[in-house]
Image 1: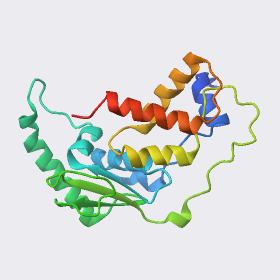
Image 2: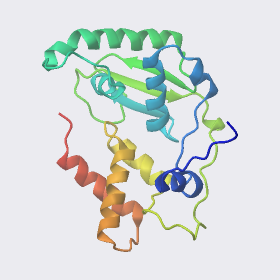
Image 3: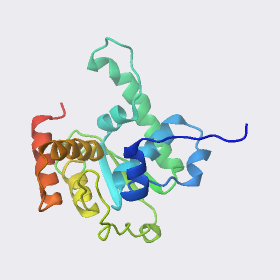
Amino acid sequence: MRGVEVTIADWMYRAVAKDKNVLTIDYNYFDLKSGIDRRLYELARKHTGRKANWWISLPRLYDKVGLLIEPGKNSASTRPYIRKFRAHVKSLQKSQLLPEYEIDYMTPPVSDCPFKVKPSTEMVRFTRRHMDALPPPPDISDDDDHDGPPRITQDAYEQACGLYPDYDISYIEGKWQEYANARGDALRNADKAFLGFARSYVAQNPIR
């Protein structure tokens, strides 16, 4: 084989070359033996962003990890699986094997959670170990060649993460970009428009 030519999608080129909307992965990620641990790192890397920590309920984290249960079973049938997942999280809390992040299982009632939760809610907190090692955000303010979907600042993204910690903010941002492109209106304040869209999306799509 002399060479390989690969054609990537326009959205991928734009995300890497123009929007710089990519996440780096710690080299130690590839040393993780457990698929669950790798998935937990991926979630922490994505949702923590440039914040110091990320909070999520244990059942919601279980859903995001994507562990399978027998098809056709009701929610009560997930209890044995969640027990095993809880034990795994507690074990990981002791070993702290995740690169970049510490993980803590919070026994209810949780008093220091930054948002309101039910007294019976089990929480998990991911905390970045070294905030000073975080590189500065890319400067895209002078990018006059931007012809893709509207963009928001990192501050707006992190604000949405804080307001709606159980939601995939990247997915909501993508839906908002589709909505904004379909309307075709010039945005005076992309951050404000995005946060308004996120508020409406969460109201129309409650997590049950």
